[in-house]
Length: 460
Image 1: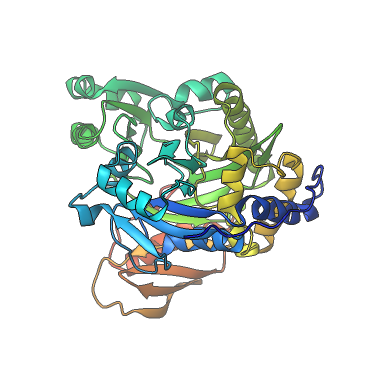
Image 2 (image 1 turned 90 degrees about the horizontal axis):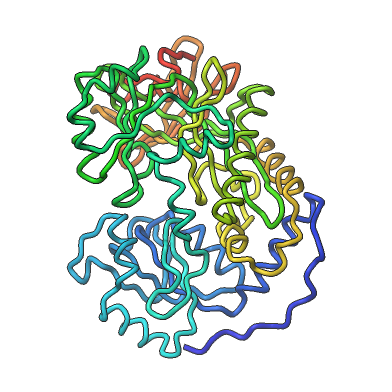
């Protein structure tokens, strides 16, 4: 396939300090870099979640020539001319296993790629966790450096919080064997709602709530350790902090940091069984001025430390809980995490490619100042707050389509499809605009009344 022609580019802007100029500067730099390039995608899942990335590439002038995935196309996958799927080669891989396979791909996929791109001119583009610099002889754009990935290990992150003076829950780190020999650790650390046990990253990253277990009663501690021990060597046992689960995204730019507004990470829990259900995020949340400043300051300190110790560039997030005592941090995601909410306000902003461009030092972005990017993103998200929520349907009798839940003065509008309900409107909002309590009401309507929002016992 002949490469697309690349027209000459106009001179790049010398610097960007005004939020109004952010979009133009980013668009100019990305089009200058991508126009005429051909790319192969390396994706664990190839479904509707790849649509935005493919659209950004095509808008910037790139040609998505092929995709390598762990399975065939899923629902809503964008059309791509050529595809190679691990399942077609008899490999059933988990997401961490797929990322490991990318480091040692077989001769069959190499021959397939070389038949399409014999001169190896294509640029590869993976997920936010892809940790290989080259794939089958082709450079990987925006690959995740090992020192960046190491930061996400939940059994080591507390050292960073201690260095930068950010509060975190009391904890201990034990080998799986030692934790099983010392079940009393849960009792010694636990508060009124018990402990949270988290796995290390020794066998790959485990996201959302899959890598943690809430143990509200100490007799369940050994079961939790055994479950996590199947895919980890060590566990972190920390006191459960009852507060609003939240996150704040930020970006390390050349010479500055941009810290955006905190978001609610809607997590429901069963205080008897210790189940945790990650339901998505909401940018409607308004924690209050002092709380917001504290959360953003934690992210600013974490970003400065990431840059200092790991040379980090790009988006990252700090997760934690807003308790009665203030913000307490639980983890740091050194990658482009979900939930920023910018797409609702600025649907055509190429955030995925912008982040990778910052990571790779693409010319034309070095002049963007953190303060200008902060204002641009925070203003856009505040102008069009959004939900990205989903609650599973646990009981019978819920037809696909729009529906409404009313409970006293509370109303939740939602849409049911594919075994899940997606809230679209919550009225009247709570004073701080939290979505968690409404999602707990919806979970009860859908057949799971044991789930509660945090802080425990919250109601609209």
